[in-house]
Length: 259
Ligand code: SF4
Image 1 (cartoon, protein in one colour):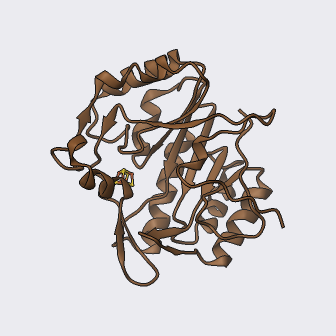
Image 2 (cartoon, rainbow, N blue to C red; image 1 turned 135 degrees about the vertical axis):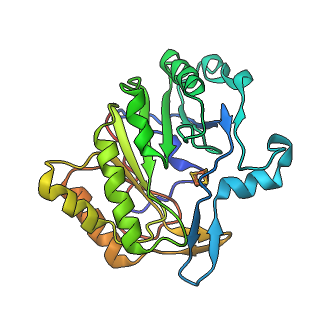
């Protein structure tokens, strides 16, 4: 059994390089707020909403117009440039930088900062992947992620259909690392990937993050069958896997892509 749970927080920003050194992990929010309104139905029937929304509604000084509002913070653009120590930086932990409501000019300004701050590795995560190829090619030091579709009213069939569409958009992304955040693993995604591989020679991502569902302090583990199937498929396709700390699994994975 190989199990070394990482500390809490957004653990996947603390990137481990091929030589074993670990970068400190930060979040950076030059934009704030999000209109996606993600919700998830928990196995006990309760509904949970986006963690960022909960935080924003608790600390209202940074979100005076609520979370479903677009905030542009040009004053924070300098932050990565000033940080000289190489770091892993998750861009938009309280937003979707590529949301349909974000002006293109603002996204380009953020991308320009990332390109300039070559000492860092940036990670972005979006639930609006149709927009991502518009920004091709992404700077070499930017890992471009897409999250599993979400919505408590969405059926598993609907989730699978949306995921298929996401994969098509991901295929068009030009980035050194494309990744998929499968968190929470709320339906059986492996068959969707298997279907994709019937007509494509590879998955359209180079890294996968897998996590359990949570509602406050309550954590709900995904079906072991779904998890095992997914891990087997990703292993077969040599896609490195990173487990969120809330997942319970004996064969622990916290592998980063080699880029
Ligand atoms: S996309 Fe992210 S930030 Fe936006 S509502 Fe969904 S989970 Fe929250």
